[in-house]
Image (cartoon, rainbow, N blue to C red):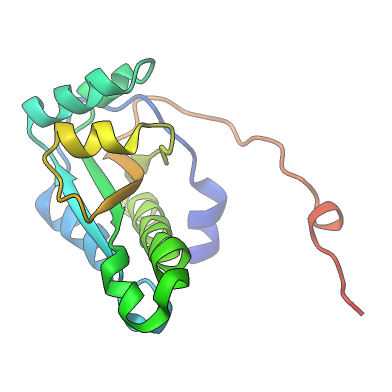
Length: 172
């Protein structure tokens, strides 16, 4: 799929088919995330892959109105790893660059999933500490985005977007 077609067709999908994501597709998605740019090429993020029903159920129990987490074939958890970035960028690396690195990697994964005929939805509405504890993530890794991935079981129409005139500002 052409890159711009990927961008035009990506949607936030919350209903998934009962079909596993093939290992080669998951690997391709993770490779796309790994290719993401990062501050100083430090790659100050970690990616946790959740596929087991027990881990998905623990995650779903924390997320209230997001029951689909119990049925999604895979979830990628993107964590900032501030200690990788603080070495070169001090506090700004800890508080900003590591988070940016993780979110850029998540964006790459989300677009790669679309290119492979899969669907996803970016989830940021969760309690970091609760997710970390439920999945026994290292304390130094801060979860910043959850990305459920699977085959879509729904079609979502495009939503209205702000115009370029509204969001682009020329600085003179």
